[in-house]
Length: 225
View 1 (spheres, rainbow, N blue to C red):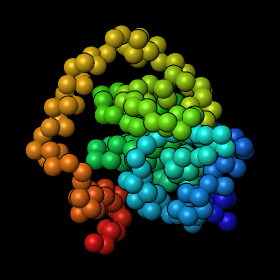
View 2: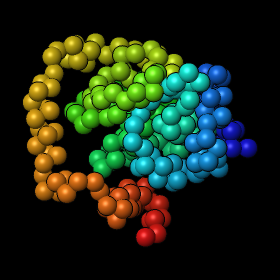
View 3: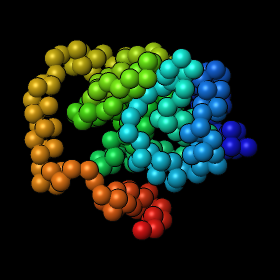
């Protein structure tokens, strides 16, 4: 039951949204321990909590093509088909960068071309670092704006074929211009040295508070402390 479409009649581009992922990749997801232990029977509000725990992005990796948690949660969202307002809040919130990445990826897969440009273009201004697990199972660092650029330009990304979208010629010309990356990196480093972040890793209380703030925006019950 947990591997079936869960919202009656919900389709994306005339088909079951789970079929946006190739069968062999879905099989790898269903076989993964993360899917079996963390995603089976998961509801939308729990996906938010799991998204807050993400620490990297990626598709499949290693000789056995293991699925990353990021890819597992993408499939779970395709099953659940949350209301668009919920996914938009994924990218509007600023506390959890991997929830933003998850929401952006889902938007690229399922929203209309007009909506994709509307919601993803502003994320070019997000220069935070993301950990990316490559095919060999090694971590690389990319930045959120690079992640968004890959979503907008590539035909195949994180082992899923992306639906075609028309090229927005004006925005495409803007993206071809050199970006002020050095300035943005300095700004990012400056922010990371602020008193709020100097203390190191967030405490569990901080993470719960931030998660509850997001849940409140979505009208969900808070996590218990």
